[in-house]
Image (cartoon, rainbow, N blue to C red; front, side, top):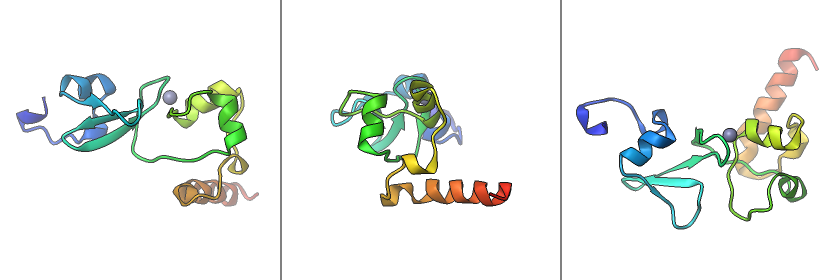
Length: 112
Ligand SMILES: [Zn+2]
């Protein structure tokens, strides 16, 4: 229980633990749990919790899911696509800035 003096934050809890704490599935998005006003995204397939969001190009996302509202972690997107994601799969949206930076950093680190 969170009320037992534990220092764990919401992102350290599993999907099951959040539900046990009384979290509700958001009425606005089926992949968001809401607990005490805080919203936590979780993956549709593996239920891993994710703080950040991201945007893939629409045509690619339609290959991954036909649902209008769905959140998947990178690992599960790659499983559905049967290939690794690349920097070109992400849109230029601001929400992707850290992801694009990570790709560029990885390339620089590998000397590409
Ligand atoms: Zn997943």
